[in-house]
Length: 152
Image (cartoon, helix red, strand yellow):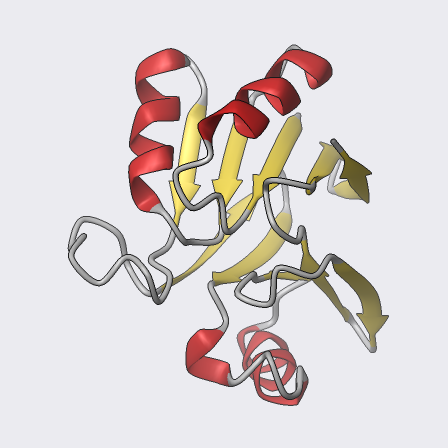
């Protein structure tokens, strides 16, 4: 299973399309908020691709998406949040603690516009950065995963 991870696209749709074309054969898209309208547009362009998303601080008018999600894909447990409610611009400790308490393998967040990836204990913290510059690729096979940052 191949999953693309975006955050903070802010109505800049061309970079999302570029990543989709570059990666090809995508099964799933995860968007960590800011702006949910881009997620809805991706759903129209790629109706066969499953999409999961959360609201960011700039999605206050969109009530169709939750503030955070906890779900499992191919045996990998994922905590998804934009991060603004956890103060990620100042520290990752709160978001890491919540992800750890939920039993997440991966904590995906955004908000800072800075790509970040670090394994802290059992939880891998992952911020794909601003969708204008970078995104993530998560590949899952038999409950094992690889996660990498990619530049546009």
